[in-house]
Length: 441
Ligand SMILES: Nc1nc2c(c(=O)[nH]1)N[C@H]1C(S)=C(S)[C@@H](COP(=O)(O)O)O[C@H]1N2
Ligand SMILES: [Mo]
Image (tube, rainbow, N blue to C red; front, side, top):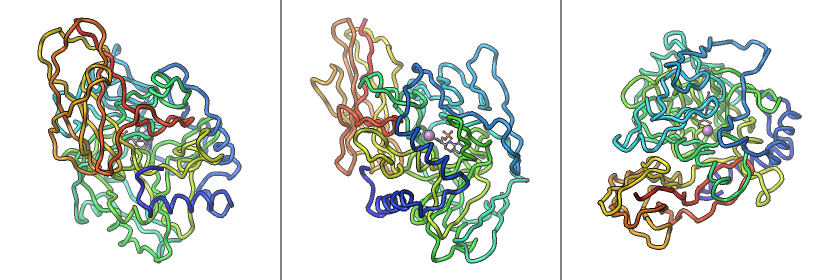
């Protein structure tokens, strides 16, 4: 892992060793199933074409769990592409539908501000968006890491706690995965995102630390396990249960929010209504949507989302994979449609965004000749940790023909986007400079 502060890295290594020795508890899934999942992850298959949906589907015939009705809902206009289970409209100029997910087209962000409007924010659903009534919703905090019994919070009780706001991106660990195949000729499994599995919003909510302290956090608590109220997930024939991923207590007490607002409005259904976690700078899967309960454990916990999934497998990694992913890597994207054309001899203002989970962005460089010459882009925002910066660069296209635009960020840890990304079978954490092909006409 890169750019991980020692405490997180130490936590991850410890959990990995505990997991291999069988001394961590597999929360809610059979240990044999977890081992099968690990085997599947290390030998992950190829993307089935570039529109492959994630291999996850609602559990058929799963036993009923205390349930929230899920509405595979609101198909938009018959001609518009729709993803099963996404509630909001997905106009094709804004989104590319990929299975149960919707990717934001970067060109659709050109005239937006720093914050991604909720109606342009990408959606990553393992199953379908559930419809949850805030008045009936409860958050149950429970487990061996509490000093007493389970504690419930209503929506109003959560809103009555001190509120904090924070601008943060949510980015899928597999964002840009398709470039392993198209730029590096390497096979990876999972949703074939280009660069748009990211959005930045202003989140408002209660601090997870306040909720945990009110629930009676014990001194021996080591992990917290937030779990979503959406349907159980089945992947490759293995029943994984509900989406949930352990978070070390140290991160939970640091900067994690239980958010109920996105850009000044109640969370929309697709983004976790009524309440979701926001885990700044970490891979998107940590930011559990539609959270219904949080287990607080005095024993280390594992779930499929930090064992077989969301670790790096491949030739450069140990057989049981890297430590579970924590922080996001760094990337840059142009707000330009793929294959766009530009008239020769006329000044253009190219715009884009760069971000890093490791530290605020320091500089962005742009090349309009496929990487021969580079120049500094102008940063449009004050770089901040856990957020992105907008930038722009002038360009006067010369001779008609194909052209390749490149953008490369460096963050304050000194990391710069490399030319190629180290391969892993599930295509996580792509960080290389992306070749953006356009035409001069
Ligand atoms: N309950 C639940 N939480 C979830 C998910 C999910 O399917 N169910 N997907 C995760 C993943 S993989 C990502 S990348 C982010 C996406 O958040 P968004 O759909 O609001 O963009 O939510 C995370 N939280
Ligand atoms: Mo994700």
